[in-house]
Length: 269
Image 1 (cartoon, one colour):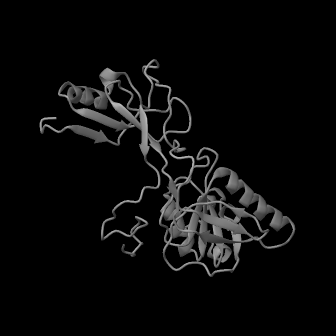
Image 2: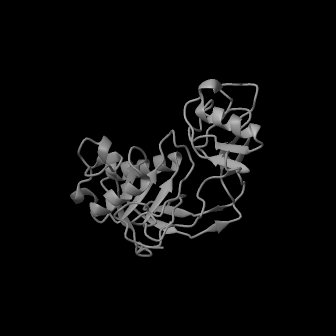
Image 3: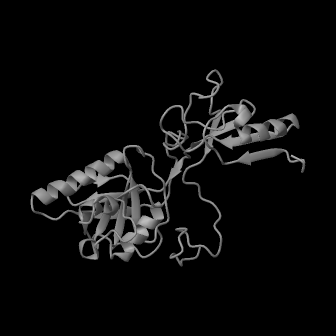
């Protein structure tokens, strides 16, 4: 404010509290008094209701929306079904036309819970070596899960949304061929693995990377993770005010950090 800026934009949030206890609301009020436009993120608490943060009337509260491009990376199952997914991977890929053994990480021994999430040290190399591994989202980062699978000898990963993640797909540049699938598609893949196991046959799959798809419709739509109203503090004032591009945005990347954003990724863009 003292510097005389025209706009303050901040991507931070927290619990909704009365305005006189909300440091962001108080600071934004002082900025607004000086004629500065203040925008703030709605938060990532969606898709449930009453999850929006930064709800002060003098703040432009911005939710996250999709854009009209995506990065399809579909899963082809051994039963012939193709399940839609999304991912970007530009390293050494899977062999074209080859089907790989497919396993669910949570059925590979251990306590089940840690392995289902592909946490560090949870995967048995004898179980996942040479296979595509289905991992559940949660606890550790999405890129870290791929690193765990790769270190255990897996050749690919399918990252499965849970019920609370819904169908929204977050694209990552993983350290191995990998794709993300929505909750319903994840359920279909698990069902296929289970049925193959019951019939004493091996589940197989491959990942089909299709690059960038333009002209996606409808767009924009509210991202599944984006916080929703109504406004918990002042219900008569609608929040969020607007949505803006906030999912799978291509952007500049620093020279000395691998695209997966984890220390072991020594690739450079």
